[in-house]
Image (cartoon, rainbow, N blue to C red; front, side, top):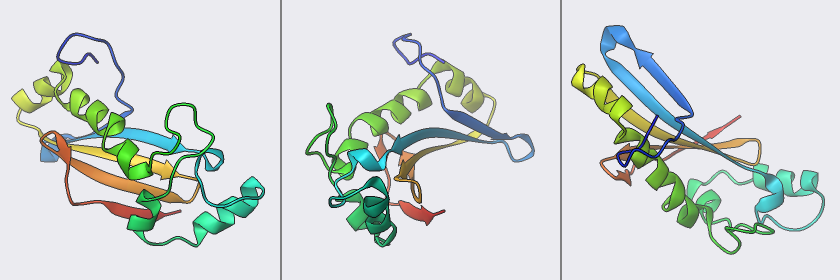
Length: 138
């Protein structure tokens, strides 16, 4: 995959449904518990705190800690910068444009695993993530 400028990249997952002419473009991110500020204690103790959070807004408002590049940012701030932009670039790639030209409906989805039990799923509409954010638990 290459972005519109020709820079090489890699889409994490493409799911094609040929009979329906649908293509899901998925970008996966994983946030380890060691880099999320959910109290102190062992990773297991912090994971137990995270398991108790069931509100998507609370998850998005968690801050990064001990992270060289994202320290102090909230998960929301980070998602609305780098991952959103990366997914947007993928959708604009020549490879995805070929699927569009073949009549496929493209659904770009950002999937962010927070800790090991929360998954944020967010659709991209145009160049911005829309209001379809879902929080799933595993």
